[in-house]
Each structure stands twice: as C-alpha cells, then as structure tokens.
Image (tube, helix red, strand yellow):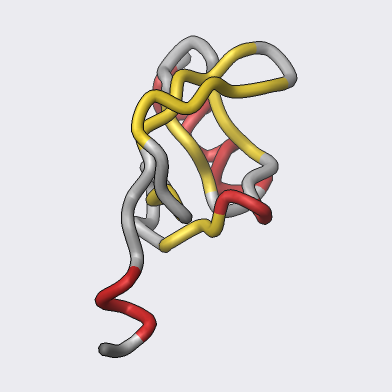
Length: 68
C-alpha cells in the first residue's frame, strides 16, 4: 500500500490554544485550500468557525471573508 492509502483524516474540536481529538487520524484539511495538514504541522485554526488553515495568510483570508 502507498502512504496516501494509509492516511486517515482526523476529526478535532478546536479550542483556544489547543484541540481535542474526536476521531484519531494523522491529518486534517485546510478549510480554504483543501490542502492536507499533518497534525504535527497544525498551527492555524478558528475556534469560532471550527476550521483549520494551512497558513496564517489563509486564516486571515477566511477571517476577512466571514467578518464583512
């Protein structure tokens, strides 16, 4: 099997400064770009929207879109 077949998308609940694992996995997907984000690289999320982002720029883009 290839590495991609072994990937399992995690389900998380995002909190201020941390997150709780609801369903174990090794990655999540960016709410804006759809990019795969390994959990050990997860740095940006919104507690309000319960979404994750691949970068600070994408997080800011989403904030602007949702706070007009």
